[in-house]
Amino acid sequence: MKDLNDDYFNILVDESCDVSCKEQMALVLCYIDRRGFVMERFIGILYIRDTSALSLKESIASFLAQRSLSRSCILHCFSHQLQFTLVGNSKKCDEVAEVVNLVLAVSNIVGVAFKRRDELRDVQILKVQKALGEGEFQTSKGLNEELGFARLSDTHWGSHFKSFVNFILLFDSIID
Image (cartoon, rainbow, N blue to C red; front, side, top):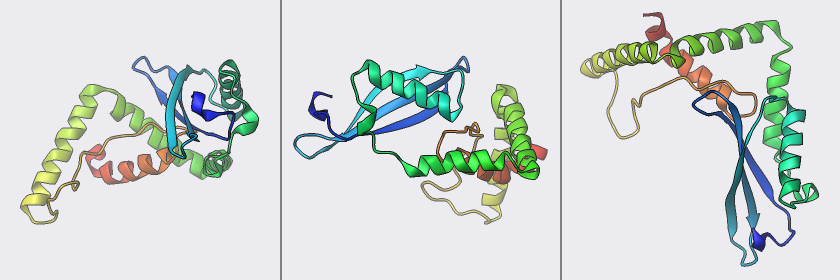
């Protein structure tokens, strides 16, 4: 990071859980080096308890300060702010909140337990094999890949979209 040279930078932040289900946040620093090349450097993982926007901001600010990186040089990503806005506003609508909670509950029931995940996988394999045999699906690289449940997350870009698409595609198999 010596070639950062006190210049502007972006931070890629991604939320995930480790195997013990502890919330963690990975940080990657993106900047243009002295030669004009785009550089991406993994700078660390933070364990976090509170995933509110304010708490995440404070954790990132503290992490940057420990590494002598100025917050004033950060270029903000407006798509991430949009994600926070969408999640926050969806929580104000009871109907949307019910759907999100239903998908979350089903994904926790089916997606977490290995036995249930294996049962869902077996049902899905049989359905795909049947559809292939009847000519309903085509085969090619990248088609008919295995679907799973993505954990819904307030800060992971696109996590809700992927979770809902997979839920819809797997719905018949879940019911079976």
